[in-house]
Amino acid sequence: MSKAVLIAGTQSGVGKTTVTMGLLAALSKRLLVQAYKVGPDYIDPAYHTFITGRKSRNLDNYLLSNETVKMLFEKHLKDADLGVIEGAMGLFDGSVENPEIGSAASISKVLKYPVLLVVDGSGMAMSAAALVKGYAEFDPLVPLKGVIFNRVNTKSHYELLKNAVEAHTGVKCYGYLPKNLPSLPSRHLGLVPSCEIEDLKEKIEAMCAAFEMTVDVEGIIQLADQAGYGKMESAAQATLQVQGENQVQSENQVQSENQVQSENQVQVKSQVQATTQVQATTQVQATSQIQTVPQDQEPPKTFSGLRIGVAYDEAFNFYYEDNLDFFREQGAQILYFSPLRDQHLPENLHFLYFGGGYPEQFAQLLSENCAIKKELLSNLESGIPYLAECGGLMYMCQKLVDFDERGYDMLGWLPGETHMTKRLIRFGYKTLRLKQSCVLGPEGTEIKIHEFHHSELVGMTEVPIYELRKARPGQPLKLESCGYIKGNGVAGYPHLHLYGNLNIAMNLLKAAAHYKDQKTCK
Image (cartoon, rainbow, N blue to C red; front, side, top):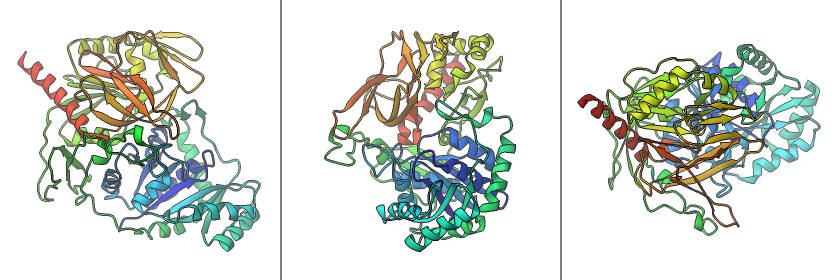
């Protein structure tokens, strides 16, 4: 039986990330721990990865179907002792379209593992019982089984909180964290990424030491062992069906239906094997029946020999690891390069992937690395397929203007400039529809996406090919545009989790394979 626990907060800023980091550090001294993050966030998973030494994974049942969330969760937990899932925002906060998706509560009901609620204990005693009772009873299907208090003054203060909660709610308290713990710096997109904090190891060690002094770690391990509010299928037996991802909601009907399926549903044949790395290989097929590959057969490496160049450094590090895993599982090789430092690209690339990140923080260094820009432009002009997301789009443009209105020359592949803004320009879940065929797929292809950026495009002359639909209950459907084609690729602000529509992933690989074949013939 798998073991796992979900850490949720009463609201944003309550300290669930601090609690999660402390728990991961304490557990990692005892067990092999697999971390997860509810929602589309990239920054918290990087901290998880730093602490555990294993890639943290995103669990998002807006971007993905519940079945896919289950499959990916079990796939990565297979060779670990215990899973720790960090929630997002407050326990019940998720998609504005449908409260049953996108929240930590919805993930807890999908996976059926116990929830630990993080509560800010400052300025409270008996009132904590009323607060916890409300969360515990709001949705009886959410398995809220414990509480950890944050920002507690003293041990005696904790005892008051504990006695009140346990006497009036029956929910067990597992400890507390005191005020004035080491904090992590933040900026406009959230926490500063882990790769930029020089003394992160020391901060985590201090956090872990404080956690172990005041939190019942062994009790939490026992709580996680109570998993099985609903027994999960193994990853080797799970049927991955991407109807939920590709059955994109018709937002025009959100008020009358919680979830309306899109007409271009895609069924996916999931070939999942329990190997030493517990890798799952999924082949997209339009079949009426979804089948699994026998466990004693090796899935074919359909795209062996493909070399995918991934921009990865302090400026570009926002990637869903499951996207990269999918490429690997199809036979492609992932080759990282740094637009900040490298003078040359890896040789013989067949695809370029530019993820999001913080190019604005490193704009001068990016601007000054002319050697890598020259090689990138040469590859792009030769017709190499590419995908650029958010920060990747910013790098592809002519210029980046930072918060202090200083302009820096970027790659210059696309026209226009990106200007940093004090306010959040676009935020939230949306549905992307292609208005024109491109490397992602034919016109009409849809996938659910997420946007979050403090910049805007100025002077872009290319016609956008992404239609973005955002449903708002009680309000008209909001339509936006983005996504720009030049050469053999596309760049836009949206972040794509490719398990939301694996046809898109396969189309990218096919484009890379076609480019490889063309190069071979020359």
